View (cartoon, one colour):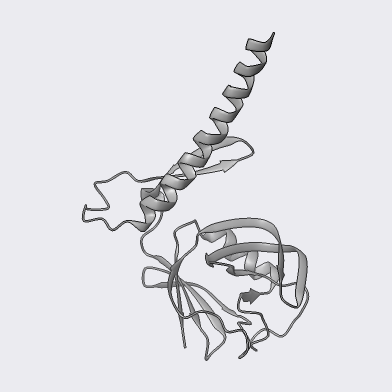
Length: 179
């Protein structure tokens, strides 16, 4: 009986460590520079979802899709190549809690997410798309001041517009934030 119990424990810990190893490999492989032609290399991204490992081919991502956020205009534009797909007013970070400027990529997407930080704790934040550390593009049901900087650094959208953008994006979609 002791052997059977320890084998089950070893099997379970093996599954756990396999998942951790896949996550670490994915994280570090995206941080390494590459000189290979991206069209000739199959890069797989792995993620754990309810104890299942999902692998997706990064070639599925449209290289032409991008999101541009203009802080001075408080506007988000979603592009597919030269075609403007969406243009929405947003609320970005206040002066004390600015939205980071630069080029980023959608790192993860969550249908709903709890967001906590200094001075806020908001449950069920809809259509959350993290693009840099704790910064995300997401729906905001708690205010209606879009077009004005009011957030703690995230990019707030009306919920219906956030849903459209969430369904349009994939992890890896380029996000450009400029003044």
